[in-house]
Image (tube, rainbow, N blue to C red; front, side, top):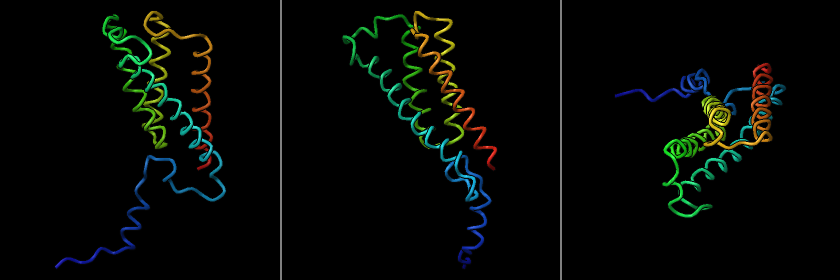
Length: 152
């Protein structure tokens, strides 16, 4: 017959396990300010990125355009829209969970958007305001992540 698991041992094992989710990391009582701000920034960014991903799906499904117009566009345009329909929603889930991979996926998504807008403006049309907004979001994310890491 096996022994019943010891709660003390399982608690120690759980404490030793390092999660990549920000809100699950043990924090000192006085050092949660920047971590909390980063978590809320990521959650707000996730809501925005869910809307961005759903707008790509709306283009695919023909919600804002006549049905069949997506299929008549170039293959490059179709591939780009499908890419953003997937990566934006995956990044949004990771951002909402406040996990490390969510931030990485979001950076991949936003940098893809900026690079495609710079080199293929016919496929990804972006205004200067959008570019400045995305760069501001990147800078804010990196600054908050750095400040949260310095609290540790």
